[in-house]
Length: 158
Image (spheres, rainbow, N blue to C red):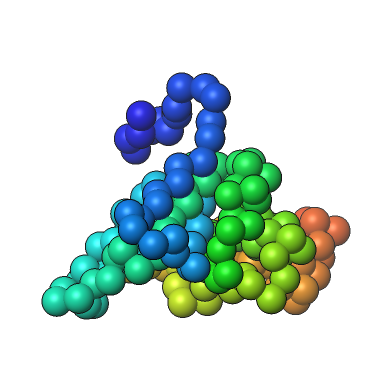
């Protein structure tokens, strides 16, 4: 169940594995959430309307970054794994967890929508807000200075 104010599910949370019929596929695309998977399908149909090749690979939707470990057993059968996770710390950590297990067979595709929180925001062309962007060292120093020095008061002194 999902809307603007609430996102929830009935326990237990698990991954969604979409396998194509016929010969086993050698490639699997892994998404953090269902909206990113649906965004991928929309973008593929938009960019390749005649031959979108949606059945050329299998798909895994984690439904939560907490489910990365549940995907590992399923992913062992694939030669190529493409991750389309969020451009945030949790997404990077999830990719690193999988990369330790599947070194040489895994690719991070989040650079394709760099500047956006996730694939859905890329589809909607909603850039990352300032609070979502990675903090650079310079910004961290500036933040630390602001904590040490109280902000100047505005207005006239009487």
